[in-house]
Image (cartoon, rainbow, N blue to C red; front, side, top):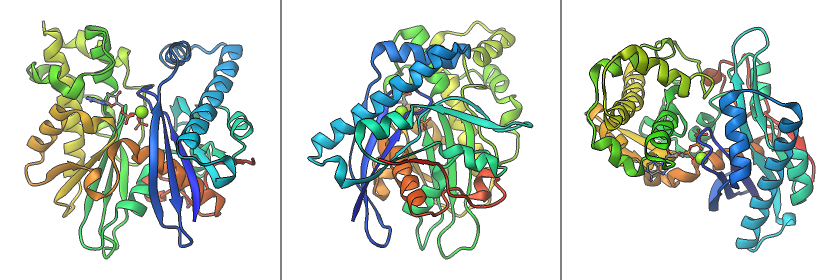
Length: 371
Ligand SMILES: Nc1ncnc2c1ncn2[C@@H]1O[C@H](COP(=O)(O)OP(=O)(O)OP(=O)(O)O)[C@@H](O)[C@H]1O
Ligand SMILES: [Mg+2]
């Protein structure tokens, strides 16, 4: 049995998730424990600045890259202490890093994550795998989403089709055929998950997020604004597709609010933003013929009761629940996926699903920074 650690800090900038996992001789994955480590205020502000202004001072960029690498290493070391393990016990860390810019189209497609893996390997003494997205992009793919391959490995059923939806800052879905079915897995980013909900809550309530969606539930969805929001060409674009805060951000929302020309209360806007997330996910599930009867939610959005109730209302013929029902708590799926991807890389196994990312072929993902 070998231990692997997965590290994820997603688009929401809500902290660094670190998951400890094991793989047995036959490659069977097991979750052991996990923890979220908040960003120190100073680093958080710098990351927010880099991501929202997209203005890069090269010295600042270089420093934040190393500062984040140090923080990831400290977080891993802390989890090891809690789990009473040492670096020697761990085969590898899979570190996603913090996305600064995701641009998978055009002549020079790229996706840029920071959190220096040299620093992580040096400060933990553990082999670190990072830069997972770039090889898939080099092979003609979107470099995203990468988690559907892990969803398939962990959540596939011999008897039933399943839908897995990760609602992080951005939301992505995986349509998982039963293993007796020869259909390939479908997966793509549906659009905003929590990113606009968080932005609006932070602006209006000065809170990091709308706890359980209670504020949204106090408002009314406005049809006219919802139509404006749904008008974005991204929602009609065929898969493979992936997106991020480069598109769905403050500027995007403000432009839509201005063109809507309605005098709406902040709570009504929040309710409409929940409807946008719920409806784009539900519509994308309905597009594909799929016999699944259950939709399993993971990511922080699983804690938003109002969002889940809206999804359930839009998906009348399916049960909406969380991945806890099929063995993994919704908070740790993404971090575990990067432990799994590191395992694949060290074992020279491909980590991408070409049917999902659009890559020309399966590739071994990531760069290895030895201990
Ligand atoms: N109790 C809660 N009530 C409502 N929303 C919550 C709650 N807890 C977490 N969330 C939402 O979940 C978000 C964090 O989710 P998660 O960590 O999955 O996203 P992420 O880090 O952006 O990951 P990804 O890579 O999938 O984009 C928070 O920013 C918040 O919007
Ligand atoms: Mg997160």
